[in-house]
Length: 282
Image (cartoon, rainbow, N blue to C red; front, side, top):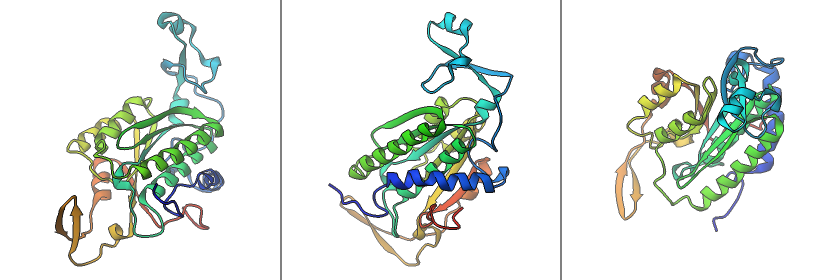
């Protein structure tokens, strides 16, 4: 069993504690600065029907559509414009390349904590939050639901899946980033916010095409997790072992954030060493 320690394992207590930080951030930050699924607290729901979809656990049964339910033979829900605008889908990259770090935390820990903070912010503003936790061998999906109970389920799932990914970090290769994003967008309602936390490892040859298609359906924010050696690359030549082979590599600055912005994707660099629970953290 791999050893657990501060910054190595994902603490459920810390994920839950981020609710307090999210509440303070939601009250203090201007609406335009938030990347979550809502720009602020709204009263009530929209009056214009946006879509009809299957009823899910946590939905308000008062919004069941009798006619659609009778036609399909299963409960169908009316959704409204504001309800869709307040929906966020958190996508956690827990593939093997995320489980490393040169400082006090792994990239995977930073990604999960950042997503938890975003999720708590959406819930604090009255929104609905869902989760896609993607490991090399499986994807765990939680449908968007409202209120704190939904986020408690998401934080517990993140902690469990992170622990499983840490134990199996040598497994792979997992799905490419484009495939992860495509699956998440397929499950998200039109107009929802997709928030993906990743190191941008193995994006896939068709990432740009997939991102463009996603943006036509949803809002997309990418939290670009970066270790210190990625934000300030050391000079020199280093040996990289891949199986039995060893090759020489150089670290070089990369422009992933600029590339994403050019695609129309809202990208934010997330330094691994930035503790979201520390005083003064964004």
